[in-house]
Length: 254
Image 1 (cartoon, rainbow, N blue to C red):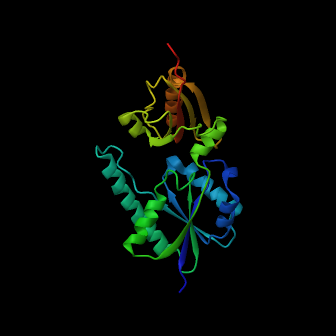
Image 2 (image 1 turned 180 degrees about the horizontal axis):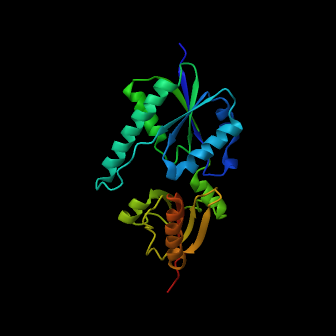
Image 3 (image 1 turned 120 degrees about the horizontal axis):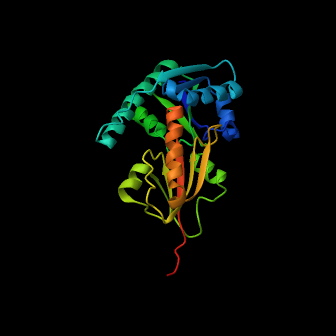
């Protein structure tokens, strides 16, 4: 029996050169590319994927696009809203795999950054398999994450000797504060670093793209500038993806 094969390919944080040799080979081995379109505002996210396919894909291949379900970002129950959106997205992707990927062929999702760091695709793939309506094998191809891109662009290491790093969200940072001396924060819409004046911040938005913005310095000195740059960029483009590393400043004796 010929089984469907699915590749979940990390394509990096935005720079086409972030693509690894493993990812290049995986794209070349793909028969059907399954792309979720997030709408006109974020069309450049789709366009990067299409450019990578054009450059590295081997014809004949097909590109199938589906519209991403809308997520209710105003719902007071955040977790429930995300779970509802994820289920609806899983149903949409299940239909793509079932209807558009023939048995014996290889399909691929091109995932921003690294699919094993901060993305819902792997959970959705597992949800599809657990429902049992479609059968396939799948493989994950790691990519350069926004975290790796951020620390490289700021020429700093993610870890320090003998110190843990906490990876969290802006929402969790706002609720619980920093839980380590080194904290990586993903997609913080509310600039939850405000008031953390005993931290240095390495911040980056649109990492690896022509729109990349970088700011680094003590939160007390650069926090307002980051908020202004973030608001302006989001207004201009209609969306923003940013990441930052908080590092506690050395304590002074006194």
